[in-house]
Image (cartoon, rainbow, N blue to C red; front, side):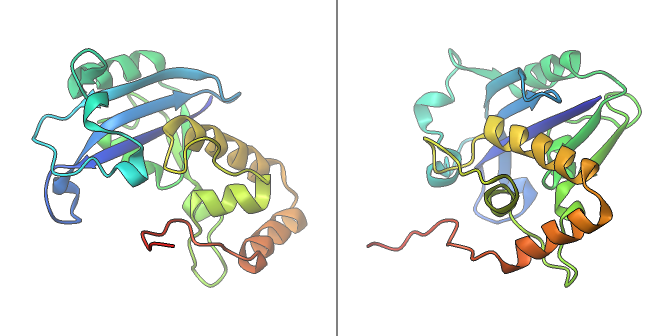
Length: 190
Protein backbone atom coordinates (compact mmCIF):
# COMPACT_ATOMS: atom_id res chain seq x y z
CA UNK A 1 0.00 0.00 0.00
CA UNK A 2 3.00 2.35 0.33
CA UNK A 3 3.91 4.39 -2.75
CA UNK A 4 5.76 7.61 -3.40
CA UNK A 5 5.40 10.20 -6.14
CA UNK A 6 7.72 13.08 -6.83
CA UNK A 7 7.15 15.95 -9.26
CA UNK A 8 9.72 18.37 -10.68
CA UNK A 9 8.64 21.75 -12.07
CA UNK A 10 9.87 24.42 -14.48
CA UNK A 11 9.23 28.14 -14.17
CA UNK A 12 6.47 29.54 -16.38
CA UNK A 13 6.39 32.90 -14.59
CA UNK A 14 8.71 35.17 -12.66
CA UNK A 15 7.37 34.85 -9.11
CA UNK A 16 7.84 32.14 -6.52
CA UNK A 17 4.11 31.47 -6.52
CA UNK A 18 2.65 28.13 -7.59
CA UNK A 19 1.04 29.87 -10.57
CA UNK A 20 4.55 30.56 -11.92
CA UNK A 21 5.46 26.86 -12.08
CA UNK A 22 4.27 23.82 -14.00
CA UNK A 23 5.16 20.12 -13.73
CA UNK A 24 7.89 18.90 -16.08
CA UNK A 25 8.63 15.40 -14.73
CA UNK A 26 6.94 12.87 -12.46
CA UNK A 27 7.94 9.52 -10.98
CA UNK A 28 5.93 6.90 -9.07
CA UNK A 29 7.60 4.10 -7.10
CA UNK A 30 6.17 1.26 -5.04
CA UNK A 31 7.11 0.14 -1.53
CA UNK A 32 10.21 -1.65 -2.87
CA UNK A 33 11.40 1.35 -4.87
CA UNK A 34 10.38 -0.19 -8.21
CA UNK A 35 9.59 2.50 -10.78
CA UNK A 36 5.97 2.09 -11.84
CA UNK A 37 5.80 5.27 -13.89
CA UNK A 38 8.16 8.05 -14.94
CA UNK A 39 7.77 10.64 -17.66
CA UNK A 40 8.69 14.11 -18.75
CA UNK A 41 5.69 16.44 -18.97
CA UNK A 42 5.11 19.00 -21.73
CA UNK A 43 4.56 22.45 -20.23
CA UNK A 44 1.22 23.96 -21.22
CA UNK A 45 2.63 27.51 -20.96
CA UNK A 46 5.87 29.01 -22.30
CA UNK A 47 8.85 28.17 -20.09
CA UNK A 48 10.64 31.13 -18.53
CA UNK A 49 13.33 28.93 -16.96
CA UNK A 50 13.98 25.20 -16.98
CA UNK A 51 15.65 25.63 -13.58
CA UNK A 52 18.27 23.24 -14.92
CA UNK A 53 20.64 23.42 -11.91
CA UNK A 54 17.75 22.13 -9.77
CA UNK A 55 15.81 19.92 -12.20
CA UNK A 56 18.53 18.73 -14.56
CA UNK A 57 16.03 19.34 -17.35
CA UNK A 58 16.78 21.31 -20.50
CA UNK A 59 14.74 22.49 -23.44
CA UNK A 60 15.46 19.31 -25.44
CA UNK A 61 13.92 17.12 -22.73
CA UNK A 62 10.48 18.67 -22.92
CA UNK A 63 9.63 18.02 -26.55
CA UNK A 64 6.64 16.09 -27.90
CA UNK A 65 8.81 13.04 -28.75
CA UNK A 66 9.99 12.69 -25.14
CA UNK A 67 7.24 14.22 -22.98
CA UNK A 68 3.53 13.76 -22.39
CA UNK A 69 0.91 16.49 -22.08
CA UNK A 70 -0.02 16.97 -18.41
CA UNK A 71 -3.55 15.49 -18.69
CA UNK A 72 -2.12 12.32 -20.30
CA UNK A 73 0.61 12.04 -17.65
CA UNK A 74 -2.00 12.43 -14.90
CA UNK A 75 -4.25 9.80 -16.47
CA UNK A 76 -1.38 7.30 -16.83
CA UNK A 77 -0.19 7.94 -13.27
CA UNK A 78 -3.69 7.33 -11.90
CA UNK A 79 -3.96 3.97 -13.72
CA UNK A 80 -0.85 2.74 -11.89
CA UNK A 81 -1.88 3.93 -8.44
CA UNK A 82 -4.30 1.77 -6.42
CA UNK A 83 -7.12 3.60 -4.65
CA UNK A 84 -5.95 2.20 -1.28
CA UNK A 85 -2.45 3.69 -1.72
CA UNK A 86 -0.71 5.50 1.11
CA UNK A 87 1.52 8.15 -0.47
CA UNK A 88 4.72 9.12 1.32
CA UNK A 89 7.12 11.92 0.50
CA UNK A 90 8.67 15.23 1.42
CA UNK A 91 5.93 17.88 1.19
CA UNK A 92 3.91 15.22 -0.63
CA UNK A 93 0.75 17.36 -0.68
CA UNK A 94 2.32 19.55 -3.38
CA UNK A 95 2.97 16.49 -5.57
CA UNK A 96 -0.58 15.27 -4.98
CA UNK A 97 -1.94 18.67 -6.02
CA UNK A 98 0.28 18.91 -9.13
CA UNK A 99 -0.94 15.50 -10.31
CA UNK A 100 -4.57 16.33 -9.45
CA UNK A 101 -4.93 13.22 -7.29
CA UNK A 102 -8.16 13.02 -5.30
CA UNK A 103 -8.17 11.75 -1.73
CA UNK A 104 -10.52 8.77 -1.39
CA UNK A 105 -10.60 8.19 -5.15
CA UNK A 106 -7.00 8.03 -6.38
CA UNK A 107 -5.36 7.27 -3.01
CA UNK A 108 -6.36 6.55 0.58
CA UNK A 109 -4.01 8.75 2.61
CA UNK A 110 -0.62 10.44 2.68
CA UNK A 111 2.26 10.89 5.08
CA UNK A 112 4.45 13.98 4.83
CA UNK A 113 8.04 13.18 5.79
CA UNK A 114 8.70 16.87 6.44
CA UNK A 115 6.30 16.55 9.40
CA UNK A 116 7.47 13.07 10.45
CA UNK A 117 11.11 14.15 10.78
CA UNK A 118 10.48 17.75 11.85
CA UNK A 119 12.83 18.87 14.59
CA UNK A 120 11.59 19.49 18.13
CA UNK A 121 12.30 23.16 17.45
CA UNK A 122 10.09 23.11 14.34
CA UNK A 123 13.01 22.86 11.92
CA UNK A 124 12.14 21.11 8.66
CA UNK A 125 15.00 19.17 7.10
CA UNK A 126 15.51 18.74 3.37
CA UNK A 127 15.04 15.29 1.89
CA UNK A 128 18.73 15.35 0.94
CA UNK A 129 19.73 16.00 4.58
CA UNK A 130 17.44 13.24 5.85
CA UNK A 131 18.90 10.79 3.31
CA UNK A 132 22.49 11.79 4.08
CA UNK A 133 22.10 11.46 7.84
CA UNK A 134 19.66 8.59 8.29
CA UNK A 135 20.30 6.45 5.19
CA UNK A 136 23.92 7.44 4.50
CA UNK A 137 22.92 8.17 0.88
CA UNK A 138 23.85 11.00 -1.44
CA UNK A 139 22.41 11.81 -4.82
CA UNK A 140 24.53 10.04 -7.41
CA UNK A 141 25.26 11.10 -10.99
CA UNK A 142 22.89 14.08 -10.89
CA UNK A 143 23.41 16.84 -8.33
CA UNK A 144 19.94 18.20 -9.01
CA UNK A 145 16.63 16.72 -7.95
CA UNK A 146 15.85 13.38 -9.49
CA UNK A 147 12.22 12.33 -8.95
CA UNK A 148 13.01 8.60 -8.94
CA UNK A 149 15.79 9.02 -6.37
CA UNK A 150 13.62 11.32 -4.25
CA UNK A 151 10.66 8.90 -4.35
CA UNK A 152 12.82 5.88 -3.49
CA UNK A 153 14.49 7.68 -0.61
CA UNK A 154 11.07 8.79 0.64
CA UNK A 155 9.92 5.17 0.82
CA UNK A 156 13.08 4.16 2.70
CA UNK A 157 12.72 7.05 5.15
CA UNK A 158 9.08 6.17 5.73
CA UNK A 159 9.91 2.53 6.57
CA UNK A 160 12.79 3.70 8.77
CA UNK A 161 10.40 5.82 10.84
CA UNK A 162 7.61 3.22 10.84
CA UNK A 163 9.87 0.43 12.10
CA UNK A 164 11.79 2.49 14.69
CA UNK A 165 11.11 2.22 18.40
CA UNK A 166 10.32 5.45 20.22
CA UNK A 167 13.92 5.66 21.47
CA UNK A 168 15.37 4.91 18.01
CA UNK A 169 13.16 7.56 16.43
CA UNK A 170 14.21 10.14 19.04
CA UNK A 171 17.84 9.27 18.20
CA UNK A 172 17.12 9.78 14.48
CA UNK A 173 15.66 13.21 15.13
CA UNK A 174 18.69 14.13 17.27
CA UNK A 175 21.06 12.95 14.51
CA UNK A 176 19.31 15.23 12.03
CA UNK A 177 19.91 18.16 14.36
CA UNK A 178 23.56 17.47 15.19
CA UNK A 179 24.90 16.17 11.86
CA UNK A 180 26.98 18.82 10.06
CA UNK A 181 25.10 20.15 7.05
CA UNK A 182 27.08 21.02 3.93
CA UNK A 183 25.48 23.54 1.59
CA UNK A 184 22.82 21.83 -0.55
CA UNK A 185 23.45 24.02 -3.56
CA UNK A 186 25.55 27.06 -4.34
CA UNK A 187 25.63 29.36 -7.33
CA UNK A 188 28.81 31.00 -6.11
CA UNK A 189 31.88 30.68 -8.33
CA UNK A 190 34.81 28.85 -6.83
